[in-house]
Image (tube, rainbow, N blue to C red; front, top):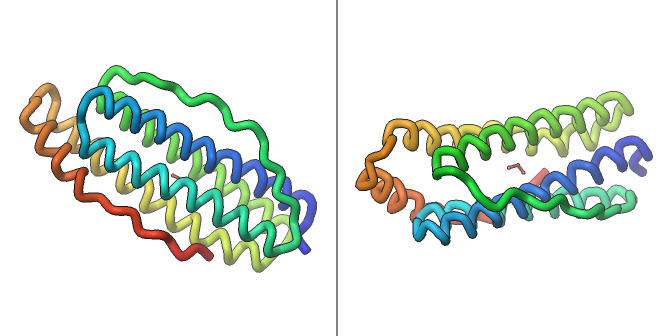
Length: 169
Ligand code: FEO
């Protein structure tokens, strides 16, 4: 059985993962408006990943005999100044999620829940990948500047990203 304190912390994180799904869906709509279909694809993969992150914790909490308590999901932003502005937002957001998962792991540590500590290891490693993926696109966008041709080439690259259902835990 999971402790009440850790259950609460998991529920907070589940909400943040669903918010991330919502945020990237809003960004997907933004890139639809720009007609950048590769970016749309990248966001759509990100949306699916965030749902998998949320559901991984949802399933885990159930498996541990905890109570899933779904809270309202905050409204995400709907517009950005440019693809660069959007990816700067993503990096800030992922850094925030990383800090939040570290805090959740701290609670698992505090209540000495070894199973949860081991489960959360997957998320800690995943955040390294998340920040790296975003950082790579962001670095390319900075190089591109105002070069529309180069932006279309990046768009073509991002069209190749595919979603692979993660095995969590
Ligand atoms: Fe679920 Fe992008 O972290």
